[in-house]
Length: 218
Image (cartoon, rainbow, N blue to C red; front, top):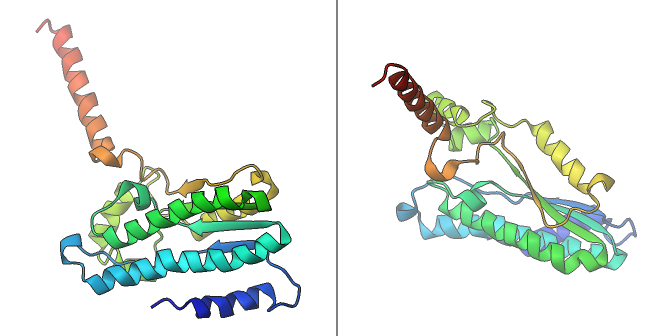
């Protein structure tokens, strides 16, 4: 189980353990994921991911939020995933947890704005890391299929996500609150009805056939 005391101890280090250093910025990235069909997902696996992602994000936000409320200032950025709103095969546990974090982000943004605290989120696309390769795309053909689904035809880079977080905590984003900035190369767009590139290509093909038929008087 995700231990709240462990979080409290770690936050004590961040805040200076009561030495007056204060806490102004928090990036919350509680994550746990593995691909598994919903009908075969063990209850233990469901509980584990919900506990790590949703409960862990709440514990972190609550503890740092208390410090930020005292000082009347703070910036919190939660890390999400686009399947929090699109859904995705094999992600029932993680998608449900991340959807909860999205709701939490918006709720805290409204509740804590009165204390000068802004709460936002970023939803990165897929990263080509060792952990991701082992758990999410264990073969090159699966990896290539995922890349092909991304309009920009590549995975996200770590620095790109870091830049987004830096933007949200910077003065440039002082009037942005309760938002989720998606950084996935456009991968989630159009997912509701399948591969829109294939649909578009087929549409163009049919339109060209229709044009030629009109020219030939058919």
